[in-house]
Length: 353
Image 1: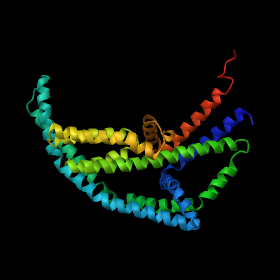
Image 2 (image 1 turned 90 degrees about the horizontal axis):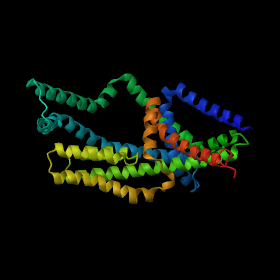
Image 3 (image 1 turned 120 degrees about the horizontal axis):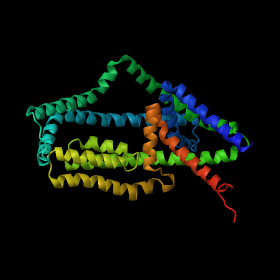
Image 4 (image 1 turned 90 degrees about the vertical axis):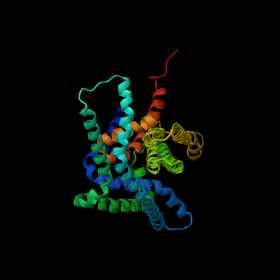
């Protein structure tokens, strides 16, 4: 097969996949979520099979353990998050007052004059009412979802289809892998299988490793912030941990949220530096001990590339795009390395003396 024909064939495959995502975007979310769960849990199914347990039973056991673990975590975490969100909504007007008191001297130093004396009060009241309303709205999202019949139906479908998709994929994973391998063009099979192997190692290593890193950092931040007495420390630590799926990003966001909360809480400079030190400590431990122990640098993805992929995925396909962003980003990285190596070994790169 000529190079031109090979390129056209794989471009057609990519175009077909893109068209499929675009056409069935409204119904793909539970299936894509199920695929991701099955992909992450499949190694555990393989380990159970080594104990002479049939694959179907292994898939059921692993899936049930996964669901029970997720439900228990939600039962433990959700009440605390809801409580802190309510407290934040109630305390927001007071925080606005504190913030305004600290801003006013700065405005006076910059000699900014406002003609109408009532403008300050009106602006402050406007900010207070809007922020309080926004936070109250965020705490009642769950209630609104329950009150919406269609949203509730979509939620039920999601929680029904996702575990079913995960189960059937885990059960039939070997046959599906064999079918994909059988469908590959004979002349391309060796190269494609090597690329798929690299993509698999890149995706699996990064996602599983970064999820563990995010969980460890989330627990560490939440515990330390609660111990030192930072208000909403559990919520801030949890958000920082979740965002740590993007290296550095979670720690930066947590640092900003923590320092701002400490200042609004009226803490001393020592307290503010203590909060900042917790996130610096977490980043130090993550970069020097946690990440090197969990995954090697060969599976790493650049934080900017991850952030770009997530934003692009959200812009194109919403939540579905964000779920697909990291696998696609890892695949593009592997393919880029392959094409660069092909280019460097071609006549277009080499020069004749």
